[in-house]
Amino acid sequence: MKKKFWLPVVLMWFVVSIGQVAAGDDKSPKRSEEEGIQFTDAAWAAILKKAKAEKKVIFLDAYASWCGPCKLLQKNVFTKKEIGDYFNRQFINVKMDMEKGEGPSVAQMYPLEAYPTLFFIDGNGRVLKKVIGYRSPQELLSIGKSVKGPSL
Image (cartoon, rainbow, N blue to C red; front, side, top):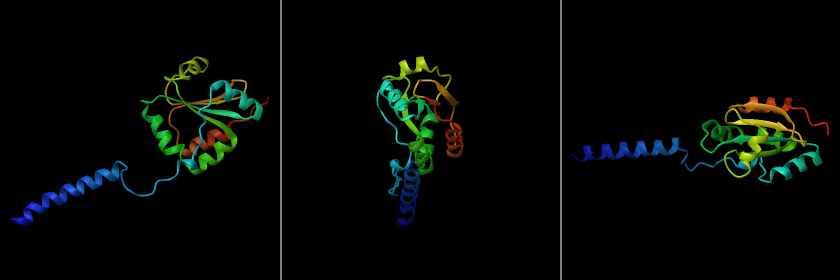
């Protein structure tokens, strides 16, 4: 009789353990987000001014909080060391929820067709490249490398 009692308990423990691992609740060390893209939360006017002064392109991740592909970009692409190394060196990186804060006013300057939209913008506010949708780390790196710096 005791054997029959323990079987469901062991099976339940196994199912719960698998569920925690699948949900990311395991206790394994996580990669530091500092390895990936470092985003600024400065005001848009200050970002444009900085881009112009430093002769850098702005990488703008225009997202919405409810957007699934946006969340995947954040989790699977922006956190990669190789992506962070390149984007942090080459661009001023900005993540902006286009439905909150400054987002709606920025969305009027840079109309959106879908989320996520990735913009590469010079210090004068001119769009150099616009990419819609999820991209793999390799695709995003290739796109970033194809963007030519501003001629300010």
